[in-house]
Length: 195
Image: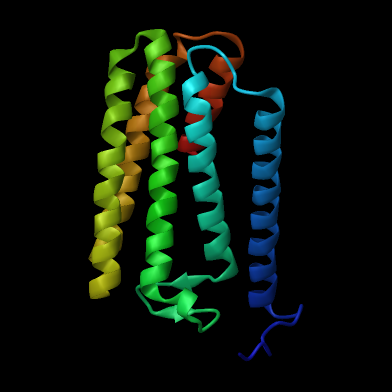
């Protein structure tokens, strides 16, 4: 494997190093969350049953993102930074699919729990709708990867946008139903989506 591109003056090496650094930070934060959860024991209350699945989904997402940062690739173009079997289109897209589904399932769990506490039926219905929307987006992504047709990517990104527009609508519905820290968190999430 040739690594002659790996010099600090090369923008590609700087970009890749940044990906590795962010991934290491995310993994460290995940381990910190896990240790905090184990140290304090299982929480009690309405959302206690959701904490452990959220940690597992978070781990799958963070590890999937780290994998794709270590071995970056552009699947449709068939370009990879390292030519290994782990950089294959099938492996890369499979890891991305699992990670992205874990990400949207986390959103659905949290949105559903927050909607249930606030008795917000519309937000709860949106929580049920976003996972199938992203599953369709993943199918479009696989279509793009298999056929090398960018239309699949256009549809995938459009469906992801639709999912987050739905999440924003749910958050706006929930905004006036909460006070304090929860309201600030909901507002911050809505602003993040708008950004």
